[in-house]
Length: 75
Image (tube, rainbow, N blue to C red):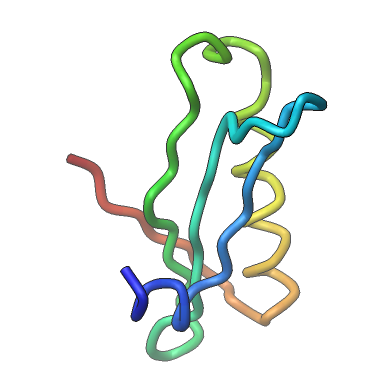
C-alpha cells in the first residue's frame, strides 16, 4: 500500500460531510503508457456520476503527462 501511494496519483471523492465516497489511482508506466488502478465508489453513490468524474480526472492527469494510451486491469 505504501509503495502504491508513492508511485501513483490517487484521487479521492469526498462528500460534503467529509466521508470518502470514491477513489481511483493512476500512473505513467513504461513508454508513456498510462495505467488506471484501484477505482472504487461506495455502493450508495453508484449511478451518481462520482465514478465518471473520478475517471475523467485520472484520464486528464494521464493526458497531461503525455500518455497517448491508457490501460486498466479488472478483477
